[in-house]
Image (tube, rainbow, N blue to C red; front, side, top):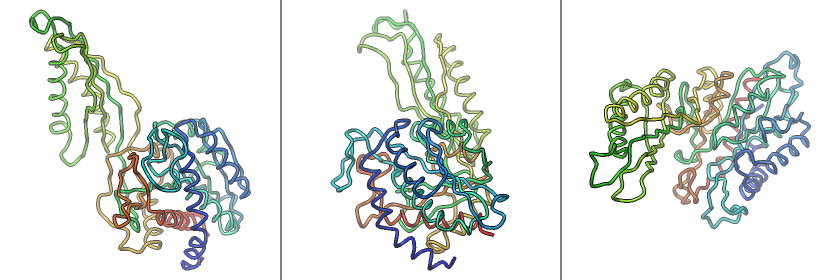
Length: 398
């Protein structure tokens, strides 16, 4: 297919693409509650003639597009992933398509991901005779809670037919519209929730010698844990240990019995992650023991790093260059400290997760992800469709 023809067809679909994104933006649903969203996705996929399975991993939807080119039945299967959940955020925006659901908002671009994937399905369904293989569309619930991808995989999304490769995108406002970021290797960090419960012995604030002050112990633990990334991890391997919550105590003059610390651990390297997961507990317990206190240590919500396969990253990079030109596809380190359970798909099959720039400073579209003022430059939608379409056609065309 000629490049100009593909661009022209996507351009013709742009009004419907934007309308579709705005529809999902107006009616957001939270993780594992995406019932109306899933029903609308399934309805549209069936209209296109795809084989549809609902309730995958809870509220996920899978659409199967079988190519009809010679040899298609023996061809490979490419999975295209799009996350579909919203966030518990009250939107602060004056756009006509503002969320109609109080306290809920698509503040991360997933509404755009849905629209892009549905438009891609329509585009490729019209070219089934050019596909020597199968495209499996996975509309994933609960990315924001980390867990929907694993649930879909447990429900067999990577089977029947077996998935050979995976691609997906994230609309990304740290990057300007017209730019596509693609890189091999890690692009999103792993993420683990960390909880430390420091138990001392409460008492009067004026008589600390009769107590074991868990707040003082917690302070020493916090300082000690910061040495893990600076002294036990290579300076060439980024990693983060951050505690965002310290809670405990009832009054200014009472020494508490216990204090709870909650934070996050981020890393890109598997060995670094495992070392930090182990050492946080060891250091916290040893520091506490030296100060006559005890610590309970808990890890929650684990998510691996998103690691792109070099061959699949090159496939997407070629597609991106064809879509936006070489000047729109910067090289260098593309890693982000955020996390995404697309990692589970990338662990199950070689793949590529890439970023499509969606900010526009001239139009005031600069709010960060998860902000109540978040929005995207909708020109990014067509770019996302084009890059995915070119990558899929390249992968599955004879």
